[in-house]
Length: 115
Image: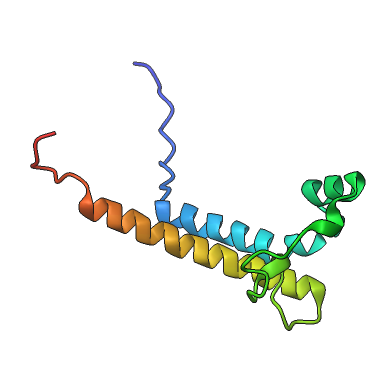
């Protein structure tokens, strides 16, 4: 007679838990950690300034948009304005991605359709 170790109970992982954890991480990064990002010019702005043509730049068509320049216009606290813009961006991105997923899944081939 041989002795075998009893099997450990299987840990049940659900996609729901992974989704909630992922969303939590994304919102913390977008809403809080983004407030500590560097305020130095990005690569394109730096090169334009170094090469002397930064002053010739013109505003784009969406420069008056309330989320222009990575911050919510009208909020004086720079970190809060940037964090809120990040959260709004995440929500919009998730909404558009979810709508596209639902649209594509509705238009895709059915299980009984020949491929």
